[in-house]
Image 1 (cartoon, one colour):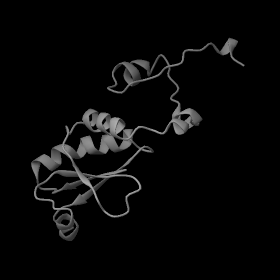
Image 2: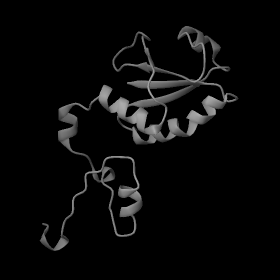
Image 3: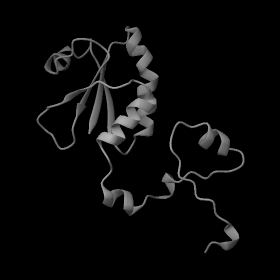
Length: 135
């Protein structure tokens, strides 16, 4: 699935969405693709997808190669974008059960636990373990 933001760099609403969009792209990396398209510089594309105002977000479902899409009409915060995307595009069971790699695991310590977990808007699954008892 792709979510594409059509924006105008001179538009205050587009400027307000920009950091939220960038953060959402980081959070959703590997799950869906987030892109952006400059409305002024890409008028033919904007016209093709009937972009009348900015910012406008279009959703292009996975597997659809015909260019069909629909409007995303939900909130424009990182949380809104991520929650909607996760509800609309759940991971396949086999992918979530397969497990990840060490890059998917964040090593938590006394130094970073508060900032990473407690101050985060994300849901965390934390495993507490004792190195002395692990094999």
